[in-house]
Amino acid sequence: MRALPKPQVILTHESDLDGLLSSMLLKSLALKLFNEEVPVEAYNYQNWKLRELREKSAWVCDLAFEARLDKPDWVVIDHHTTEAAPKAALLIHDLTQSAGSLCYGLCREFGIESPTLDRLVHLNNIADLFITTDPEFDLASDYANLVKTYQFWNLLAVLDRKIESLLNHPLIEVMSVKRRIEDPIGFDWSSRNAVRLSPNVGYVPTVIGNNNLIVHEMLERKVTPFPVLLTLFKKANNTVVASLRSREGEALKVAEKLQGGGHPNAAGATLPRSVRSIEDAVAYLRQTLDSSPLRNQPFSNLEGLLAELKPPKSLL
Image (cartoon, rainbow, N blue to C red; front, side, top):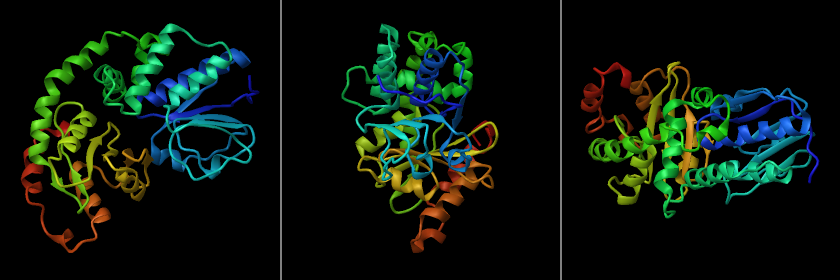
């Protein structure tokens, strides 16, 4: 068993199941090793880049390793691509596993394991690595969609902060029904209403269904000419989040232009605070991403689309 420093805080990604599961596993590990409840803080990519790293020791999961994390008594467990090499920090890194799987491997070194955790980690691995060929991909996607639908802290509260309670939770049935009924409807509507942001990026408006699965299907069927497809989500605090998907590794490059991050084919970014609506976001993204002469020409169907979406204020 490797020696681990006592963390002052556990830092994780707030936007998906992998960040939730990995942080809760590390919290259990810290409790066993140090008999102390270590606080968890969760961040989206933009706020994470802005956070000051003032702690003398910390455990970080599901956030890419970078030079500023290379500090004594810092442990980073992650699976995102990185060009930084650790000199002071302990980096546990594997591109072929989810952060949850890596954290669980660490937990098992210290005797924290169970059939329930085995199952949760397996499903999370399928969903986070987007292993579409796995026979349980749909079920795994339902688990992952819980965090997208109910949000990190809300879902954790429902679970009474016990991650094991997630397995076979009644809310999984809700996700299953939504996938079977909503996704085909959402796919058809979104496919007909995708618009150009730049020569390589298309905006996919979504009104119903699992955005990630809808966009994945659009990429697989090549229903648009764009190698990168982007969706937008307006949070309760009026910040707008962009999610990007691709098949050949282009998504991360676009996300980095927006000060975001993630995986080569699945990335995201939080847009500037000045962007307060979907209309603002589309205009900002076009200005930021499109350097072609066509940038100043109107979209073929965007004005009509936004007019159609505008009455339901909840969508904007």
